[in-house]
Image (cartoon, rainbow, N blue to C red; front, side, top):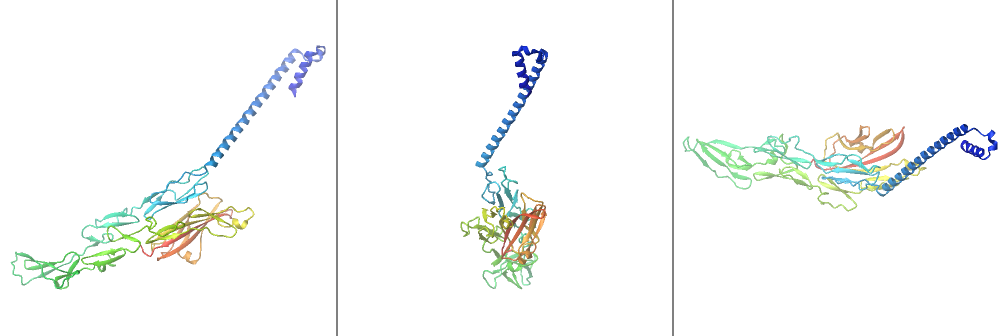
Length: 447
């Protein structure tokens, strides 16, 4: 209010000089004008600064509105490629959803098993790949045998004179030396003769004898041996019986069939023979489409067969669940006043494992981790009755991870189930529950 009063006073004195005695002098008027100018300049600067601040706020609001509009039109993470020799579980790429990667038998996972679509529209973790497990890395073949790496197993090509799954057994050599007192040859003379066989047939062969310096040496072709004291007859060697369960091990991984002069290994249904002829390799009926699973079922390859499974979301009172991926069900948001709903599990995830019979224990079968933990405590526990606790237990491997442990071998065929619960707590108050349901298909064979 000072500037308007001063300006009014100056204008009044200039228009009415008769009141000059009451008006300020020229110097005083000049000083007042300078003060008015300074005051106007200060007001002008304040106004311009306020105008600039207002423009900045408007620009920030426009920029924020543009980003939200862009995110609304594109709220999904980039598509993840399916790993070679593996499969991807989960089709939704929206913010808040997970994608899981599983490798085929004989391959190990390198990278992140689970990836989460973040609000920044990028995936958590690292790109996963499936790397072939090199079963020959430990040099399992003995006695100069050559190891051949195969999917989920190995085979050995043995050097001459050796046999067995790992070339651990020498091939048997059978011969007989007999003094022939009726030989008419001189000591320096040697002759080769073939003596007549007492009988003939696929499992009986005549021997081959050489007379050297009055001594007869009789031998048999490979796979046959001299029959007792009768050096004229060679009988078939039953390799299946000879190497059944001795210290050298079995000739065949599964079943051995004796043949004339040799043997043949066979494999059960669901397996193919390997190149060495002694081992068996599982057939992946899911990958080769040798299964009868319907479109709404998922094919799970097992050792020696397959299983068709279908994941249906559980029906629990006070809560409803929807399937967000083929292996996961999540609870719909609970009303604020519905305490019973908030106590139900937040999600159910389903996982299937294929193992061989009598798998050695203890060993880790599955791990459960929290990607975005809330609260101050994570608690892991095993749900189920006496049968579940007979074979499984849950241990913590680090602050954010619990692991399902197999504590005793399982004789197949069998199907076992275990539920692992992960609870998030804040000052001992439960914030969320997450159930992981693990189903283990145990083969009837140990390979």
